[in-house]
Image 1 (cartoon, rainbow, N blue to C red):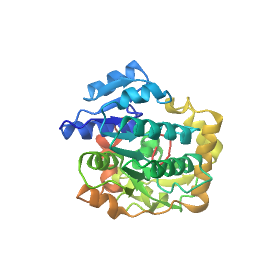
Image 2 (cartoon, one colour; image 1 turned 90 degrees about the vertical axis):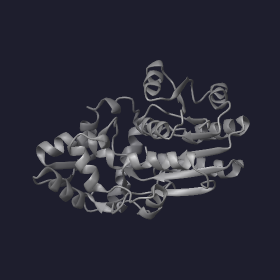
Image 3 (tube, rainbow, N blue to C red; image 1 turned 90 degrees about the horizontal axis):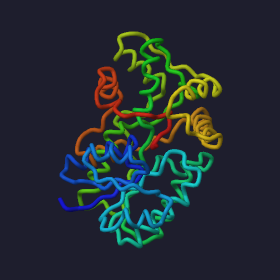
Image 4 (spheres, rainbow, N blue to C red; image 1 turned 120 degrees about the vertical axis):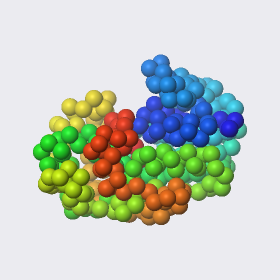
Length: 307
């Protein structure tokens, strides 16, 4: 293929998976990254790196020059994400991009959680731009359990600061990347807005803990810990060090909403129809996670959906 596809925030857990999917389809994507180390990482996966700042209009236009499509991933918990989205959409319009794909999040209408509501604003800007677009709305990544998996396997306790009885939707990030690659390389997806939810994935943590117990062959219980205890654990992880107080507040607002309401379901048939097969569910994901398979690769997460 000669199609040129630009991926923003391309060195993260979503971008690197999408690069692999596109390369497998014969596409060498272009990857916008900030640092030389990130450029080397995406180059090793088969992408063409472009080092630049996504906030700089000149850098955006340089990265988008000659691009047919843009896959826009905002860096996690970007406080001024609407403004970044506006700049991306404006640059794509100026560059003559023919397809803009937005990596959004399920339930963008949750105005009490900034990183949800911010994506709703970006969607609105995209709708009004006149660009051919597709919006993907992934729910919580199953991979978000990966950083606590060693303690779950060791102690038989899954600790998060929300009611274990609340039901949420989940999706395997590898399925999300495959769906994104399909949308970017196959015709017929313009003007689509797709919820991305895994098969049989509208479960409580108590139900998922039972599946974890089956995978491990030992009891596992889902426990609600305090926000303070969660932050104490998370702050020991390298990925958490860069977050400011305002960004940590977004995480806590998300967990508070989960604790009160769970997460709107979404429909797994959408993703399965895109993939042409059933989307993966928890039993398959846990089997891969337990054996150190692809499911856990490259994850540096903290419990957010669609991040």
